[in-house]
Length: 323
Image 1: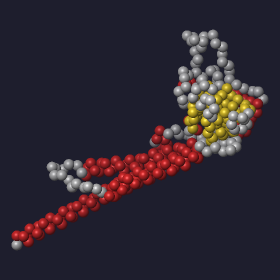
Image 2 (image 1 turned 90 degrees about the horizontal axis):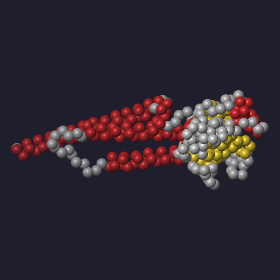
Image 3 (image 1 turned 60 degrees about the vertical axis):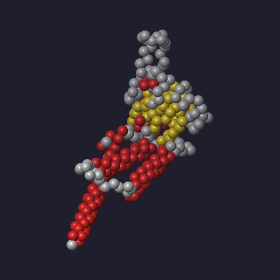
Image 4 (image 1 turned 135 degrees about the vertical axis):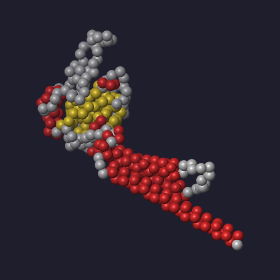
């Protein structure tokens, strides 16, 4: 009788423990499901609004004016959303484990040697995430670095300490001819005039040290190298007229911070009139005035050379008024 009674009690204890363990598993599954639904809801919420505008582009420059800039911007925003989704899921698991498995007494919890589903998850999931991000990064990078055989406009960008020269060319490569040119000076910020709706190739070279050609709205930043290296890139079109500041983004010497220029985007008709005026011998300022544009840069100002006071070159003549 005693043995039978003991067996009954033991069986009852086992059944009770089994029901408790099953309940805990159900509650754990419920929490995981809720966490997954919360992450999905956050993802839907983020993708259903202008995330870049809401969160200031997650640090990425906004206001791109080329198709390439829009593609790079979209890739960045999508990557940030994916990172946030993964982060919410991981943070949720961390906090759930902290609360669920916090110490409740001196008794040790059940020790688990392995968990195949969890090991599979944290091995395969990162590989899938990295593979997807790598695929879309490779696609976008290949697309924005693509150059056509015959772009509509070719500009040679020549950098020197500490200014810019822009040569409008009749073809590509070193053997092409310059049909018009704009040269910046200490007193006049150089203005690079380009048309909307045209494919434009930039070919870059330097006369002295490494510089960097950067217009934030183009979302391209390319080093300008001295010697035989000619970095180049191409935009399929510029979609918006306006004036945009350009900068040297490579520390190149004493006046690096003042090595600015301006990109002036105009209609194709005005661009042709501008080139015609330059070919006729007019300066860049005169050609800009002829097409109804402001003659001088409006997004940045020339630097102060301080040549007339406490300077090693006090008697130097003026560097000119631009061309």
